[in-house]
Image 1: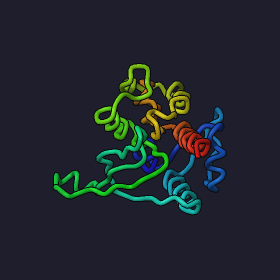
Image 2: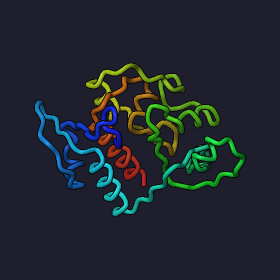
Image 3: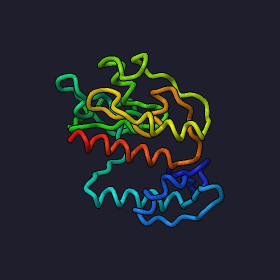
Image 4: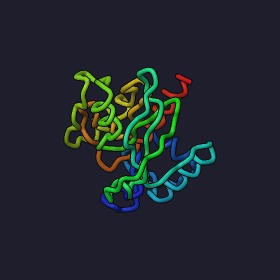
Length: 193
């Protein structure tokens, strides 16, 4: 969301997701047809600040190399600095454990690719990643929330990765569906805890 649409520092959300920005006290402009716009930098910084206030820890420049498994359930990530990966250096990674993990890596769905390649089939109709379709914002906004689900035991896919995994259209520069997808991912995990 930092870059808004095409690096213009603005985001657009629908009325159905406005409450998430309201909770973080993000200023919005009422646009026509039940859409709202906001400054993308303000939105990200206030959302991050709210997450930190709620107990989240945020790490920058991290790559997921692998997943941790226990009894056929994803229970953590094997991580390294992205600069190490980019430079092609051999530096041993570290692992972090979690009760549940989220792949929110966007169009690349990187963690889901790792699980499919190294662990086994995903919870999709074919057991594979279905390949994201071309942009159709209306459908993409709806399906990104519908496709937010546990794709493998212990691993929830969220955001644009959800549409990439389940073969739905990309959404375009409207961010309400991604916000609602993140909220749904959190709700899925809370129900399981």
